[in-house]
Image 1: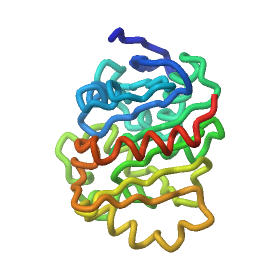
Image 2 (image 1 turned 30 degrees about the vertical axis):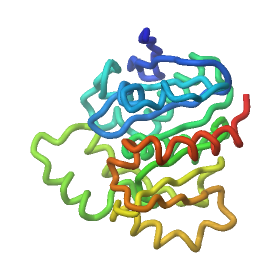
Image 3 (image 1 turned 180 degrees about the vertical axis):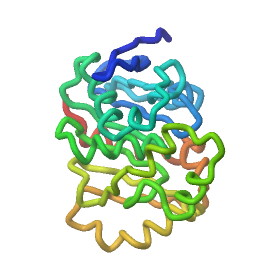
Image 4 (image 1 turned 180 degrees about the horizontal axis):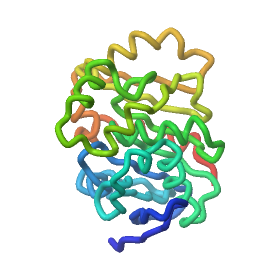
Length: 227
């Protein structure tokens, strides 16, 4: 799979690859991973006729540039990266699938840009980017990475802010996300967010158990995809 690069507004190189034809789906990986996780996890090779899968190395990961200042990982920079990739593949509109950290990154684009047709939002809460426990953990990290420092200043995102149809995938054994489900479930009517709780799945399994999640994610995206 050839690697392509696009230069974001601040000069950071963003790596991505492209598979298939049709409406574009931009895939954003989890923390500590890279775009290859979508390939090894079976998502890109799964039968998904009629879509172009664009897997992206989020800045700081994989083959993308690795800036060192917290400001380089601001929400605005991440949004610029996603839109630069979309422009590079000539996608005026596109869907986003984000797992864990990738969902956290992608939700800012999906809540701020009308170019996003749909988002599959896998395994994280709505509201703050970090809960109180994670804020304490990040503040106490030795040699704290720039992206983690940046997340301390990320604004919350509420379900009502999502501009496009959003499928919220949560495993019933993902305690942090389930706390958020309990908080927001009654507030979802009238928003663009649909919740899908998958019985027995932990946070890693929300991604790993493709046989439990892919068909629903694919059908949701197909129902809302636009060229």
